[in-house]
Length: 539
Image: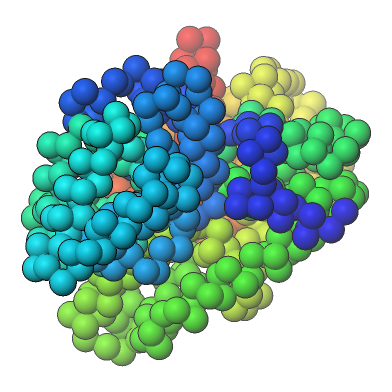
């Protein structure tokens, strides 16, 4: 099966029957909004919605699903007319144009509104044309005893083009008219809904879409398996469990990207890094467009931020780019406004910056980074797969009551064997002999340093060390460049920063650098550490 076949999942290419059948994610959000529509008689002005989520999160699909449901509902279709505006609305630059487009949509789908646009157009030379347009539209709706729900994709693109007085006028209409309701979708609502000085500040009810969790991902991939008659899809999902979960976390669970994984996993024998590389190739046109759209100075700034991966400061960018901090700050603000980067507060005055779409950052590291950056990504992929297929570490801590004498004796015979050194180091740790355990830890780290063969076991040791509250000793290990533990065990490092953040401000700042792609795993490690610590305390 070729990737092109998955273009059928593009909601704009699907029939009503296909879209409804394949609608397996965003069910909660759909039910919440539709229930509100169903229970609202629109006698009075109703709550307006914006569905917020980054590209590929399923906003368009959700809007179309609502459109079909409203249109097909036996009760609603007698009184409510849904109109859906596609993502690219280049022609709606003024408020009156929104009403003209609405009139044309109504005419195309409802004979009873024939001539509505021409009725508006007669007044096109009037100074108050946009007011006249809405009055004509509202009057016609009242005359026909109909209500209107406008489903507007990329609503931010339309609202940003309106002049301030037009935004204010639209807000007043939506507050006072019971004939019209808006449900929009947007990838970035910060500029026009969270700015106190903007007309739509705190106006819309936001429905925030998140990346798919593990259960949703499996349900989604199973559905695709059914669509494309992949009879062994359940076996593929089972045998690739660690890989799929690793890539889900790395990509943030973006539905569009998870759909691309479907045919990549037809061959379940390849290494996880091969699958990541294939996935990166398929998103290259999208991310290349993002870079090409930026100005030259912004491209240079993004290069610095992306290659650093973890959040970075204005000063660090300014020093690297050799530009005044004020000028860099202005560019960073514009990049944040355009949804390319996130701003992370360090304190009341200072901020750090990070690429907003984390998989875009991964793509950039792999396409433009050196060997060091590519190794960082490879280590993280391996970490995720190992972590997601782990046994519960708390059960492994049961083996601490080993005969220390026999373990030491075994070590004397095979002192260069990783497993022997590792078992001794862990046994020493559980028996409270911390310094001796750390001494042996340096030995097994030295054995593994050029192989990465035992990374899973090493990560367990680091977590057990954390559970013993040996935070400073663990930090020293992470600080030794020889072993590159920060790069190899990035989520565990940030879990350590969580436990150390109250010791010193530098650790608190460091913890704030954790990327969105790491948060779920970091939280799981913190939970695991707390469980083991609690068990040890009880004993």
